[in-house]
Length: 440
Image (cartoon, rainbow, N blue to C red; front, side, top):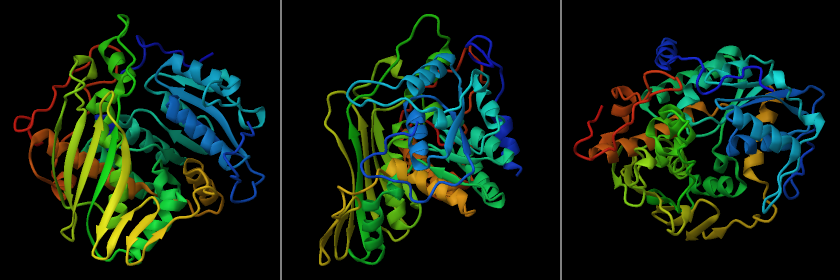
């Protein structure tokens, strides 16, 4: 059923470094709750393609289709054929269980076998398949490469966060954000808190001085363990790593970048930009088995912002451990939970939780509206700065050094790209040791 039936053994070989160098030179889906599109659907179709057919990619498809009935999915791409097969099955048959998902209806689903693409170059074929908007949800390492291809082709983009795993990638994304602006293309990212009514209202009050001058804060993503897909004997080292991408820094950026970025983004939002420096620590205590690659399982990072305020950032993934996912800000006149509460002289609490639209849908409503109005949203620089902020924390923790944001942005030569994208051998990165791992 695949127009490019590449297997893990015969997919094409190429490297990302050439792309980075080139960039440097430059279903009527049931809607959630009472959600309705924020504008009347236009007569013109917006054709979308998905690159990266895992759970978040399929979720983004449903969010985008819920945003506007005239959006239509026409192409799918993934490095693995079985991922395409699973995606086609879910989208056409739906799912059952605790969180059932209905099948898409024909009016919003027009994927044919000729528009299902596999292999490392599947993204190129999706982008060239006649779409208007591409949803990028592959492992984060590939985001700069995929963004570059989309914007050079003149395609609008929804990209999952983060948008890079190293400074080389983040710098390229900043350039690509400028390219998107020049071409009047949308560049919206999966930072749904920026589109959530409770965060928007609370942050507006904070910016208005509700808690005075910001003096510090804390942010958390503490949770239990996550999935691991095992290691069948038939898989090469590269296939094993890509299948289990969470645990390899070159693919995910480690969980401080891949997941905790949501909370770090809220801190950058509050302080009006990235921090000036970071000092971090962490390690591996629960995920010591070599199957977990070179990722750590916990981080503790202090970010210092331009006004001298310090934010404590905590993230952890450990089986059996308790959860906390939140942010807190302290000011001279009170404190705030950016998700909807202010304490102090101007105490206030967001009252619209029950009526609030799903922010995963709203970010796509905002994206589609901006395209239709000819004023496409561009969140590229913002997400690149937050991605680099999370990388800053990781680099500081990995090396045991205090690191400045400006040094990482301007001087760091860190590039985690493997020698080649091919289904064979792949380097197995060492686990970082503070005081030993060099600052590059």
